[in-house]
Image 1 (cartoon, helix red, strand yellow):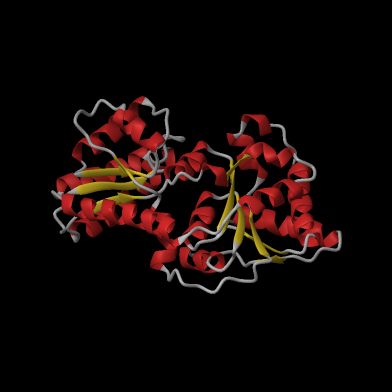
Image 2: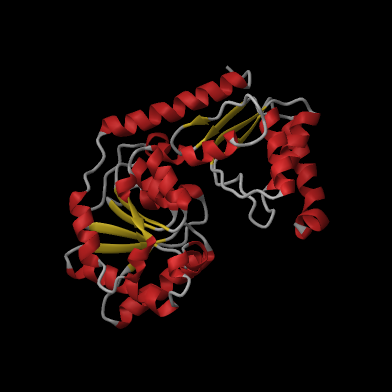
Length: 319
């Protein structure tokens, strides 16, 4: 908060004013944005609203994630934004309930799947998958699990690394071709490299994909992986959008909520799985129960997302 108000705000507002003045409408889209972690998002989104209102630009909230509790100032800011928005949609029913509990009367909050599920449609859904023996492991640091999962507060670095080593070794000796990848975060990539080095010490050489530095690079890495065990939520969402089998390790309730929106809770695995010392048999049995998603299911997801976007643009006067 101090950094924002003392150092960043003036520069950002100057840029945002130029951009918003040149636009016909503003859409605040995607992400777990309506949260109040360290008062990080509220003042930024509030300034977007202020500039939009000052320039008389219509504003919409599209496909965002919401979490509580909100502090007093965040609540004031978010409710001002909700009251001004021409259209509001969220990516799960938990988020919808939080918005509806606000003191803003008569708002309509629409729910549709996370827009990331459109990846296969937008970036060419007809892709040639790698060998069906290929399996991707999407990894992030243990600190995130300690922070968000009460039962894992005391998990050690050694226990966490050993989980991945045993899981990947199990896949390797089970005839699979493991690939390790991350969402591009530097700490994620360091964790992936460390796990790879531990595997190498045990005689298992595993490919670690280069750190993605753009969304399209990550999409290109995920698009042809037929099976993905994922910790980062959007890695799983993107892979699913390309028709891949996905098992998502749930370290935050938003993961469960997003998958519940498309009625695929069975894809979500409790984070306590990290405590297993021999995890491969468990994951292998789950994969046997998975089926590649049929076209009708993905089509239904796409239709829901596109319908909501169409309604959003109509509300903004764009169609």
